[in-house]
Amino acid sequence: MKIGELAGRTGLAPSRIRFYEGIGLLKVERRPNGYRTYPSQAVLVLDLIATAQQAGFSLDEIRGLLPPDLEDWKHGSLVEALRSKVQDIEALEARLAQSKAHLVGLLAEIEAKPGEMDCATNARRVLSRIRSGEVERPALGADDVTELRKARRRRPVSTG
Image 1 (cartoon, rainbow, N blue to C red):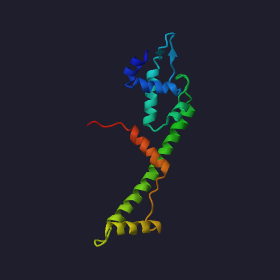
Image 2: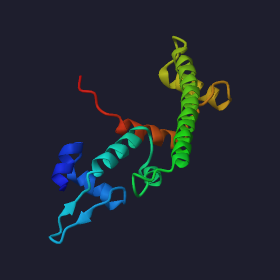
Image 3: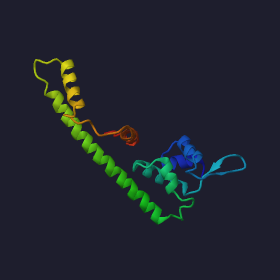
């Protein structure tokens, strides 16, 4: 099938399909006239890529999971990769819960501003308490924040 038909059947832009082809996730044949032709299983491959991305897999991880031929899945490797991703998500959830607890504590500390105290003085008071260890710092690291931003970009936009 040609790229326009594949785009229509998957809902993906031709540029996205070419991108996946360019990074080796999608196989394509070239006709003598230069046109791309995609096998019928390309629809399934693109659906698998989209599903894996929504589950939090990077394109590099997906490349490692997809067999060269969809008839040749490695059951053990697939199960291991899925279990590993679940563990990654659970670890991130734990760090998020810890960070949320710290932020709630920080919010309570900020809101406990004595009435006669101005905001700048209160900020110095709270920062001093954080530095002294009386108030814990949020637990998220830079990698966690990056991962959350990626997840937010991958999340479909609700229209209703």
